Amino acid sequence: MTRVVYVNGRYLPYGDANVHVEDRGFQFADAIYEVMEVAGCRLVDATRHLDRLQRSLTELAMPAPMSRAAMLHIIAEVVRRNRVSDGQVYMQISRGGSPRDFTFSGKQLVPTFVCLARPISRSIRDARADKGIGVITMPDIRWGRCDIKTVMLLPAVLAKEQALAEGADEAWLVDGNGFITEGASSNAWIVNGAGHLQTRSLTSALLPGVTRLTAIDVAATIGLKVELEPFTVPEAYAACEAFATSASGTVMPIVKIDGNIVGSGIPGPQAQALREAFHRVAEHMPIH
Ligand code: PDD
Image (cartoon, rainbow, N blue to C red; front, side):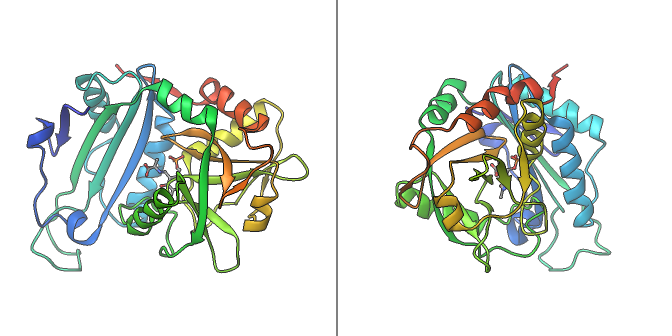
């Protein structure tokens, strides 16, 4: 449960936390966000998440609402006030609010900054990973700058809703050439016939996942090979293993794709090894 939310300079009770009706995040999805894991009262991969947040701002010519140190102070305060030891932090920055107008230059916009945190039980997440999840595939109908973490998430909302309707947990999005770009809210991986981890290399078609990057580091520490190559839906069906990476699930084994059993139908050894080693390798920033 979230008790306290930071909104534009104030820590407010959850029920009283509001932004203006003409906020550009609300009207135009002119906003960016980050989701960060909290594990054992520490921020997981905070440096990489804040680097990506800065990149999203820069790509959209959006000013930062405050310094990185000030942001980290607020994140820590929100985590503390919500008594989160394991869970996640959500932060969103919009370009601000003003009478509705598509353009933004020349306006005195003050960015909106919202930060909230909620506890999530580790055992519930681990139980999901122990079983493995199912995914469905569908066309990727998103825009051309999926490398920017914007709140323009309607295609992901619809994809996840369809996955839920079909009894799956995540949707893998397929580009016009038949290659999987990524999941609706995670990066997509397989273990291929050569026994190598395979995930698509970074382009504007997919989010540069922080967990993906750390998983590449983790793989190196435990002697697993990574190939940065896209893969097709038939290649995913035929894979030895499949898994997803995201801040909310870390390394999540996938046991079913479009109803087809992956490998032996249980979480694979490489995905499990990556998951097990993940928190040993990821940055854990103490909350002061
Ligand atoms: N989702 N791809 C997409 C489209 C995402 O939305 C996410 C993250 C990822 C994984 O990125 P990272 O490893 O940095 O979390 C990949 C977050 C968790 C969310 O929207 O809740």
